[in-house]
Image (cartoon, rainbow, N blue to C red):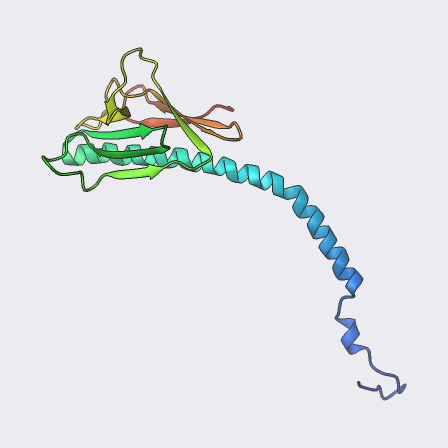
Length: 177
């Protein structure tokens, strides 16, 4: 302990920069209150991001399939297995006795559900007994491919992937707008 020269009393240098226990408890209490108010809103935001991320991932795979169909001059299939929560892309007719080495399979986020719809009234294109989008060698979407794919999350939010009128791709639409 240091003594001051003028008064001979102990110096309070250490005390000046420290917090008391009551001040620390008060700050912690305020943090708990703020976090308890913000946490429910953040979880809803994160769930909404999962739905948006899944729609963008699906759209990216569709674009990759379309590009691959054009570059390889071979039809590509983007299949959707809603029951097992997966979708993927591969050649329509791989070489004899071999699997497509560039085939991709993606698992849907566990809080997102996929539904395939067609408004044309004709039978949907299928691949391995599940609905599929067929990209022809010129990059166009086959006429019998699904017109609409709906992604729904457990909170009730949904995004739609809708085929463009000129059959060159899909766009993401938000049903809340």
